[in-house]
Image 1 (cartoon, rainbow, N blue to C red):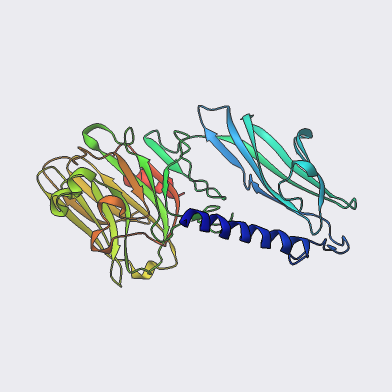
Image 2 (cartoon, helix red, strand yellow):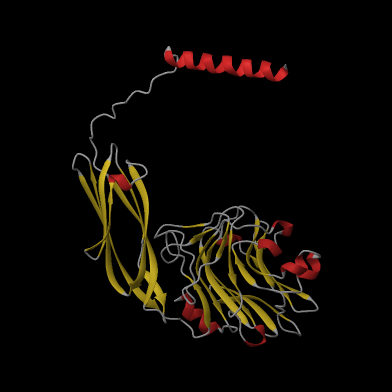
Length: 363
C-alpha cells in the first residue's frame, strides 16, 4: 500500500510540473542586446617579458608564448606570429569565451638570437589591435667556474636555474617583481607560506664545501624568517635539536634584525651570528655565506661580518634540497617561516669563495 501511495504522489508531482510548463510559469530566456561595438580589442603579451638567457651548453630550448586578448563585444580572429611567420590563427569558433582568451603557445626548440613575437586581434566590427614584443636570447656564461646554480629571477614568475635549466619545486604562491623591481631587472618576491626548493645534489664540492650569494632587500615584517636552509627531513620529524647537526640554516630574527647561520657538523651544531642588520631594511645588500671543511663566514656587501670554526665538515647525510625564502619543512619552528623580502641574482658555488670572488660577483 505504501508503494502505491508513493507512485500516486510522484504522478501528481509530474502532472503539476507539466501543467506549469504549459501555462508559462517558467520565465522565458530572452536575448539581451550587448550594445554597440565601441572599443577595439585589448592585447597583452605576458611571455616573454624580457630578454632570455640559456645555459652555455644550450643552443635551443622549448618556450611557452603567453598572451591575453579581450574585447567588449566579440572577437573575430586572433593571429600570433614569430619573426613574421604565422604560428596559429584562432577563429571565434575556437574560443570558449567569444570575448577573450588567455592563450599559451608551446614552441619547440626556440633558438638563439633576436626575435619578435606578435599578436593581432580583430573584433566582429573589423577593429584591429596589434601588440608585439622584441627580445634577444643569449647564452649565460658562468661568472666563476665553481658556479653550480644561478637564479636571475626573470619577470613572469620565472624561477628557473640557468646553470642546469631546471625549475624548482614551488610551494605556495611566490612571484617575481616587474622588470625594474629587483637589484638587476626583476626579483623574487616572497609570500606567506611560500618558498622555492632545488635538489642539492651536484651543488657542493669536495668535503661538502659550498658558498651561496645573493642580493637581498629586507622586509622587517614578519620580524623573523628562514632565508636559505638545507636540512634532513627524516631527523627533523623526530627531534629538532638533533636535526640541526645536519645541513645549515641561514635566518634572521627580532628587530633590530640579527642575521645568523646554524651549521651542522655531524656531532654538533655551530652558531655564527653577523649581528644587527636593521639598517638594511628596504636597501639592497649583498649577502654571501662561505662554508669550508673547517670554517663558515658571513659577508655583507663584500665585508666579512662573522666567522666560526669547527673540527669536522658540514654534514649533508639525508639532505636532499636547498630551500630559498623560508625555513621550509625542516626549520619552520621558532617562527622561522616564509620571508616577504626580495631576493635577486641568487648563486651557489661548489667551493668556499674568496673576498676577490665576492667582489667580482658584486660587480
